[in-house]
Structures are given as structure tokens and as C-alpha cells.
Image (cartoon, rainbow, N blue to C red):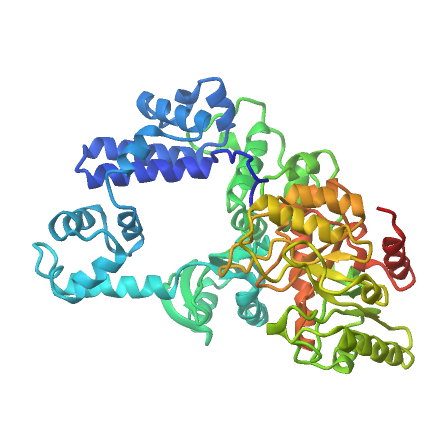
Length: 597
């Protein structure tokens, strides 16, 4: 969720580029003037390369100053940036079925062929296109033939198999394995995974490996021949693209060791962060790209408005930032969400690290739907070096998860108390993941909850309530003094289920008022609450608990994914309660129960 409910989402530069490119496609479908089509494509490229403040130019009605924008397109861009919509685009788009635009995603299928199958066969979607290919109608069209029809079918199958979205947690193991293999190669000097993976985005579209070496051909050949590679898309000495067995496209870029820090920074992104960084370089009379930082005057055809400063020697990313009068920006923060100003003002937080965690709370056992016993979970936590582990099996209403009755839960509490007597320097906390019922009541009465060390309150059913009703439901639940943590706030399952309608800022206000600790559910299918909300939670002094929602000993490793989200949300160790050691965390749990409403 990018913005709070009812908050208008501004048109970004990338949005404008996409709309200009779509305008070119629409004109092509309509058989428009080729010069006009080219003008839109040129304008899109101009925006991609523009380093200035586009919204400011729109406010001042000076968009024509952007090189590559003609008067007509500048006027349309003005309308788009100031109103959030472009009437000409919407009207033109309405002339065609929505499914037609998905066909542009198919490799080898351009506007002319799409126009032909639409006008002559009535094909208006990928589904109807595939049917027309298989029944011979496409092959019969002039300029197509059986080979074209076969290639279109192959492109459709490839699109279905490789939709282009991957959960970070689903591809992390294979990505790290390939990275380690590259690191061990004798000809590799430095290497890393860049892109959205390095920035710890929850959804990754591709992988970008950056390698420095003196023998690019040898390393590139090793990369494309790796056992994890399913197919080779392109292969060259300095750039290769493959598809891994997991289905994700993976690119290798090979550079000289002196170019490595610049390539790593550039391909880490984000695009918006890079634009801001390049702008600072220009202010100093320099130009920054993926290979080097150099004097602008040395670049052919470029002139600096300011007297260029001397460029200091640079061997890593930190020195590039330092040259630009910035503190080092951790990769997770490079999203152009205030990190540049914070780096300039020495206000960046020291982000939480995995090693800071001392324990965690939301974990399941075989008592409900877990696959490891209480003893096995305790042993695994100690092996990881944790000082405490909270057990929170499901409550009785989660029938599908074999939720515990009150009697079963209290019996487990006694089992935990007994096990704690055998532990030295480690403690199990007795809790429950208690269902929030439709009316906001909790699944167990207060006299049962009072016998626990803590309570995680979560929504597990009735997801279709209106936003106001769902928000009131959750606020009522966390107003109960026995509730310690609010679990997976939005209920989302990445690439499977959108979160239910809920007013997140209102929930954050309620958490701040009641002292409820907000869970960052580290299960890679959830990663809930989304990283985009954590700066606001931090601003409201709402504390975070990074919980793996582990159902097996191996899933305690999910804490790694949770830390990545916490870092992306600007959280430091002081914002995360389970960075506290035993003794201090016990006091936090006790104080939460004693807090007056």
C-alpha cells in the first residue's frame, strides 16, 4: 500500500514515461502519423534522461524547457502532472479493448500485427489470440504464416510461465547460492547482487549481478554455464542474460575493478535515487554514470554551469557519497523517500541488523498447525543464539489451523513453565495468537488471557468488511489490555491475496494510544506491515516486533527477511522491542499489561 487511504497518489516521472509510450502504441494501433508516434517515443526517452524537478517545472508551466519535448506534448504532460490524468490518453485508450494492451507484452508482436489480428479476426486479448493461433486463423492472415503463429504461441506460454513477479523469499536462496559460486571463482575480484534485490524489495522482477574481473570472457562463460541456469537469453563478454531454474531473469554485468563501485551504485538504483544523485554530481560540475565520475567538461558536448570541483579518488560506494557531501545511504533506503536530505543533514538512522535481535514472539508448534514440537523450537532458538522465544499457537476459532481450546492452551502454559526450569540463560514465553472476531472481541475471555505472558491478536477470517468496520474491529481488539502485539495488520499474502481494507494511519494512532506493539510479520509470503508504513509508525512512536510466524524450526530463519523490511522502513534497534535482552523485554511485557486505557 503506497499511500494512506483517500490520499491522492502523485504522477511520477516513470508514470509519465509509461503513458507517453502507451500513447505511441495507441497511435500506432490507429495507423497514426509515424512522425507523431516517434515524437511521443522521443519525449518518453527525454523524460527518462531528465535530471531536474519535473513537478516544479509543471507548476511553473515551463515543461517546454525539457529538451525533446515539443509544445503539444509539453501541454499534455502539463495536464497529466497537474491534474493526475490525461483526457486525450483516456479517450484514445477507451477506443480499444483493455486486453489488447497486454498483447504488447508478447515478445515479437508489435503494433502492426496486433492491429491486424484485432481488425481482421476480432482478437482482443491474449486468450483469444492463442485460440486463433491454434485453430489456424492467424497463420492464414497475409504476412503471418504457421511459423509466426507458432512463435506467438511460444511467447504466450513463456509469459504464463514467467509472469515477471517473484517474492523475495522465493528466490533468495538460489540468488545467494549463485552469488557465493561467483565469489569463489578464481578470476572474480568483487561481486554483488544489485537492483531491487539489494534494496530488499518484497517483490523482485529480475536479478542483477555485478562482477569485477580482469578476464570477463571466462567469468561470463562460467555464469551462463552454471547448473542453476535454465536457458540463455543473451551472452557476451561484459553482459549476459539467463533465466534461472526458478524462472527469474538474471543479468550479469562484468566491469573493471575501478568501475565496480559506480556500477554497483548505478544498478542498485532505484531510478529515482539515481536521478537525485546524478543531479548532485551535475551541481558540482561532474557527470556520474555506471562506469565513473568525471569532470563534465571532459564529456563531449556537455558544459557545466558551475566551476567543476576536483574529483577525489574513490574505491567504494561510501566514497562516492562522501564526494557528493552525503553520508553513506544503505541500499535498503535508496527509494527517493527522503534519504538524500537525511544523508546531507547527517540524519540517517543506524539501521537495525539481524545480530541485534535477542528473541522473537510469534511462533507455532505441533499443538496447533506447526510442524515442530515445543522442545524442538526451543532448541532451535537457542542454537541461533536467541535469549528467548515466544510460543503463540492459534486460538480455537482458527479451526483450519487446529486452534487450541482454553484447556489446551493453559495446559501448554504449564508445559512451558516446566520447560523453563530446565533452561539456563534462555526463556520461553507463553502466549497465543488470538483471533480477532468479526465484532472485535477476542477469541478467549480475559481470565484466560491473563494467565499468559503476552497475546498476539490477529484477523484470520471475515476479510470483506468495509474499511471503517474493519478498522473499528481491530481498534476494539487492541484496546483490550491483555493484547500485547497486533499480528500481520493487513492480512496480505504477496502475489496471492491483497490486504483487506483498513485505515492503517488510524490503526497506528490506536497502537500509539494503547501501547500495542505492531508486528512485522517476517514470513516472506506476508512481510506485513509493508515497509512503506513503518516510517509513519516510527513517527508515531509505535514499537515494532519482528516475528517469523514460524511453523517449523527452519522458519526461524525468516527473521532475516523481517530485518530487511525493517531496515527498508528506516527502523533502528531502538524501534524494535525484540532487540531488548531478557530482563528488559520482560519489563516491557509487564508494563504493557499495566498500562491504563
